[in-house]
Image 1: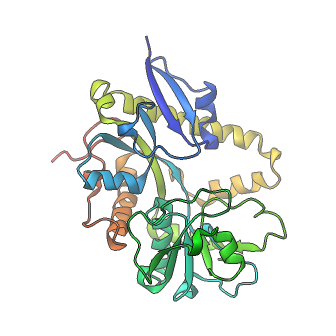
Image 2 (image 1 turned 60 degrees about the horizontal axis):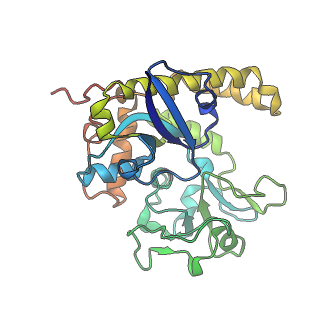
Image 3 (image 1 turned 90 degrees about the vertical axis):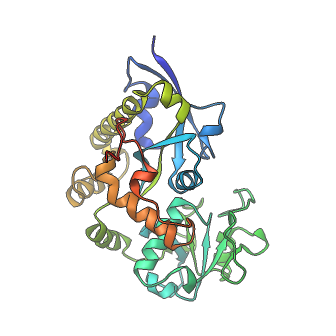
Length: 325
């Protein structure tokens, strides 16, 4: 009798084989809920046993001593951040360094992606204290919510004026740039009025990868600790299924690339320009990235002290202990 695992994931393309049952396990009956918003705390959820979890919020749980969630270093969402800074098409700003002294909008102050994007700016000499920050909703369709999360500081980090959508503020010149991984509706139309801030963000991402050796991770898999305690093998089993789903999906994407013009070219470039295993799960292969993220959270004032990778991930994806000393 397979164990039922209730799992909440965002609708990433590569989980399609898992959702459809093309990838499965005789040991697990996986019930996937495709969610638009991350489960805020899977440890307190009655609906799920595991869920896609924000890296930054997971680190907050760990530093708070909340051990109700066990995270594994399978980073289900990762990506370069240089492409995630947008500005008005007529803006004179074309480099991160030019954002010094400017007004920048973010969709959530402590969000993992925004932390990584601020890290990219910091590499260009623009730290938290070097710009004016506004946290708010991206568009009218997004809800009004507290996006400062306790990190507001008058004159430095504030709520968006009047809780107005940031795309409107950018159009009107009240913001100079916005951080967002998800482009607003109409962005890809020729008359959207917006563009990526970096004219050649791909080249910037190549330089970044050459310097750091990884693609930043934003979300990971978190399990209810009590569920793992009762079924310690489940972490390794789900990790293997997610990895297999990704492998199967990539093969299909390559086979059916002609459904999107120029996709074959992108797939060829990605295969040639990134080393094999760049997206691998596991503690050892991701340790440097985990350490750098913890360092950024501390430097940016989100965590009160520096945490080690072993503190953040006491267990590897196979359930083994990461700290064997």
